[in-house]
Length: 144
Image (tube, rainbow, N blue to C red):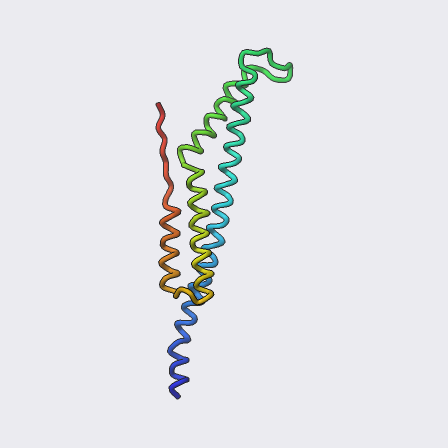
C-alpha cells in the first residue's frame, strides 16, 4: 500500500517534469532557428554591403561599361550604407553569437538533466540564464 501511495505521489511530478522537458526541447529548437537566421541575415547583409561598396568604388570616376549607367551608383551606395547601418545598429553579430551561446548553455544543461547530473530546478535556472544571455533588441544608431 505504501508503494502505491508513493507512486501516486510522484506521478504528477513525473508528468510535470515531462511537460518541462517538452518545453525545453521546444525552446532549444527556437534558439537554434533564431541563431541560424540571425547568422544568415548577418552574412547576407555583410556580403551585400561589401559587394556594393566595392562596386561603387570600382566604377566611380571611371568610364563605366555600356550596360551600366552611373546614375545607379548613388542607389548602390545607399544599399551598402543601409546594410552596414543595419548590422551595426542592431548588433547583429553579437545577437547571433549570444543566441548560439544561449542554445549551447541550455543544450548542455538539458543533457546534464537527462543524465541525472542536475535536477529540474537547476535546468530551469539554466533556461533563465539562457534567456538573459539572449537579452532584448539593442538599437544603437549614432549618426554623426
